[in-house]
Image 1: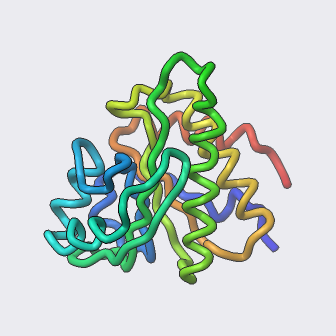
Image 2 (image 1 turned 30 degrees about the vertical axis):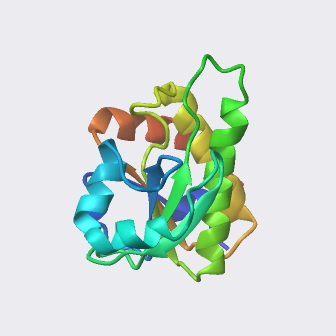
Length: 176
């Protein structure tokens, strides 16, 4: 089997345009849309997404839930709620790690062979970007080392500076 990190891709661009089995939405606890990537996903998917999200009765921080992708190229949207950065002493790292693990568990349960993640909690939730990308890369790499699915995980970055952080953390993994 190939090294786990061979299954990880870094993409700079719009997550709503990716043709993958599932995209992950950095949602808020209501799951009813908001700013940033959350608002972009809701707009691109159409009103049906909000309707389905209303049936889910929200989501706790660190957890994830799945819906259809509707008008998106992605078949599913996995909604996860990242922590708001409060200085690092309120369990933020474990909650952020849980977002990645729970999203990947749901992806596997729904036979998703390809999944794309945004940089969860790094926007309005102010999680330090370097710390957040380190957690993301570690959790995804650890998960795919032990699981056949997803076959491909994409870190979809809003800009090249964020993509570079992912590349740096991916490079530190070394061999399996």
